Length: 304
Image (cartoon, rainbow, N blue to C red):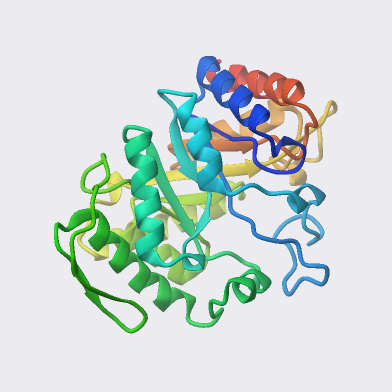
């Protein structure tokens, strides 16, 4: 099983020094990947509750660096770990521009990029960037058509409902062929079907194993129905956690618990089909020393 770490990006860790220190140390420890998330704002009166805990957005989210800028810096001081977005809200960006930026990151990192895409959960952010909340699924389908064309075609042409591109050359192309792997977040029926039909994998969360297994089964069925190789898909499970010294009640694990409890859960996700796990320690530590100590303890338990 591959093991990933959320790169410093928000709260007390939103500094270049933290990014560089943790990225280098994580690679040296043996982590396989570094991941960055996507957040624009913290509304004073949110349109939607935060999907976790009591519905309140974590205080640390008030300061949040751009994910692709963070991954570019992390990539510049590492040479082996893969660089992923978990998840990037695709519809906030015109597809031609974001596809070009992602290509640039893939080129500059020498082919280490995993493109994790999602639709988000906060309507206020869509309002802030001037993108309609309604019709997100259909918009994402066309967004993907444009991005695929930019990544894979020598002559890029698109005439769709939302975007038009005259016949053009757009270079360079990604190092990875035919394009960087695309993984999707999401838990709705439509999202799971899209993963099977168009994705290379699923960015999941720390759900109970029966739920993980059931959703993964739905994704693989959708892939089979689309004539794709369902065995080639990946599942990456992300856990934003708070470590404790004493064992936590089982219903709080893996989001709260000891290193042992969290590690046991992460290892058990392999039975549900997970190929990779990803931990975010920025909400349970306050300094890079604490973060790296926790990262090393988890890694040792997971590799034991």
